[in-house]
Amino acid sequence: MKKKTKVVLTVCIALLLAVGGYLAGFFGLGNQLLPQRSENASANRPVPTIFVHGYGGTPASSNMLINRVEHDGYGQRAMRATVSKNGKITYTGSIKQGQAHPLVQIIFKDNTQGDYHLAASWVGKVVNHLHRQYGVTNYNAVAHSYGNNAVVYYAATHKTHPAKLDKVVNIASDIGMDPEEQKMIKSSRVPADFRQAVREMVKDESWFDGNHSPFNGRRMQALNIYGTYRKGTDGTISNYSSRDLRRTYHGINGTYRELNVKGHLAQHSALTRYNPQVAQAVSQFLKE
Figure 1 (spheres, helix red, strand yellow):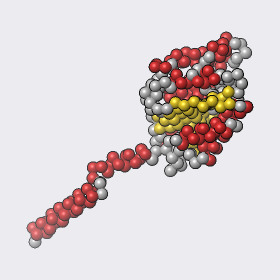
Figure 2 (cartoon, rainbow, N blue to C red):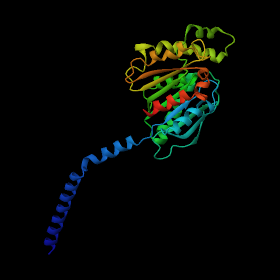
Figure 3 (cartoon, rainbow, N blue to C red):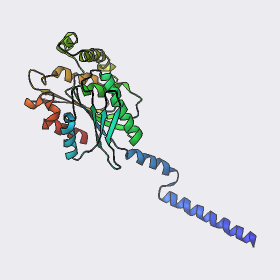
Figure 4 (cartoon, helix red, strand yellow):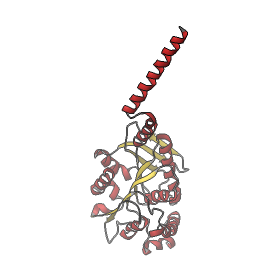
């Protein structure tokens, strides 16, 4: 009797294993199950867009852009990262589950300090937080004026950081320095910390140049927006300086485009606060 029960149990187990194997093959399960979950998890990670203002900037420096991107259906305003003068970051809001393209506004309380290397480290702290807290591995960036230096310097110097820059919009960038702007280094009318920033830009410019650019071979897309308000400038930054980004992004594995915005709303600060053409271009670029 015991022997017969043992045989029946053995047959049942064998049948269960056979049926299980058949179903696994039929539905494409088995050994592929774990990789599929991993791929799906990666595909579902949010891809945030960070907005970084320029020298003297405030939330108003990027509110119009964020509102337009949200209105056009690409992303949702999710979070503000406020950086104190000592570098402590306070996060307001959060990325909700299911938000594919959250919009993150970065605000520097010390918005007139001229060390963009320091500002780059603050950007890095925010990106690292997004990675640790929400699993972010890819992000976009929209920057204005001095904020471009922080975003570009961080992306260029942190090759091992946990999240990769996919798309970047540079507005009124002053990464390149024309001869007239380089004279600011010696001008007593320019604040000392800003003169120091100019010195750093002059040093970094050769590093970002052409074939030596750290962006060589990077998979990314860039949109460079600059304004012509008067005499080849936006009233603050020359077109020469803004267009110099083409050397920085030389050799990227992706697209680099320029947009020259003209008229009274092409003034330096107005570009991101009031110019609908800029807002439309940013939104369209992110949606592509």
